[in-house]
Length: 439
Image 1 (cartoon, one colour):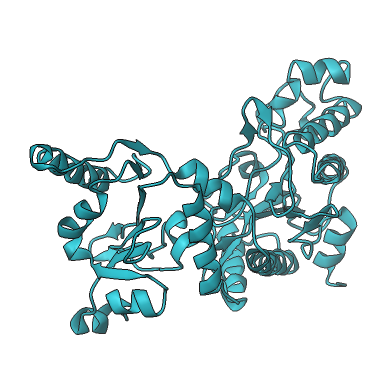
Image 2: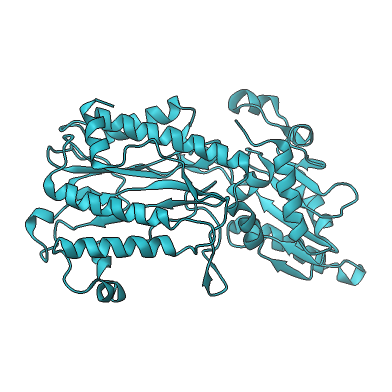
């Protein structure tokens, strides 16, 4: 279950069609990063680079030159090296970049200073994302300045630089059938992991033990890494939106909020479930949970091609505000409370974000000054929440410290939408039944 070479080729063609005549696009790979002495973090390729090539090695540079006689797709990468490969694994080498990854031309990355300036020279426009890598930014400018220094002898430096992000990220926003299949599998693995930890959660366990169970289930399903640091926050810890310490002992009577997703073949899932450590919601916990669930359902009902990006968020805000008024946690008219954003004391984030190769995936949320219209092939999260600080003295003590978020991954289709993480129990009844072991 992978993206085919023909799809990578189609992506490059689609991108080059958007480039101006006589232009060049340059995209460096991600770099390896030191974790501690003599150890590195697991290498993960830059998402833009990977989207156009499927190439997973560091120290590489992708160059696209529409109309070039000797080939439009040029790759610079590491050479084969028996000693280095013995220690660190196989390399494709320039020959492999052509044979296995479809490059028209490939060179050792050590020759990039000698060859790439010649490819830039005479081009009217360079597409490059300045600011991502200061070292590569300097390298690019050194090449351009070298060309400029030779203008007296006829060298022609590029006329202008253009950030390639907007064009490329608009392509990435729409997921192909193959991408949808990978994201469906990521959602399936993640949903199964959330269900698994519900069945194994007990008072007295530590948050990191649930995190370990999640990681185990991800790997068993074929997803080597989580898509992001897992959040396992019990009790008051759940009120910290990006809590990742995951070190507390879980107490009987508390809720635990788990925000975790796997990365499968570079595509992310992002799912949150909130459930009682002891398997049974209290009256107050259930009341808050059901408001969030109603907001979740109201938001999903607005995820229809032709609706704009903000409609699901607006729907979630209205349901949460009305629910908080019903419980006495907010006082006033719903419309007025929405107008003044009074709900933000309890619901301080937006309802979702784009999802894909990145957890917070690329793509504009506005086109001009208008919210973007939803279209088939886009994937987004839906994650309303209510967070009542344990230090909030404006509410009755029985509500303090309750935090609930429910998040699913949603594919927009021509018919409506599809929940990619549908397998994770979501209602109070489903969660309690799962934790009791009857599902």
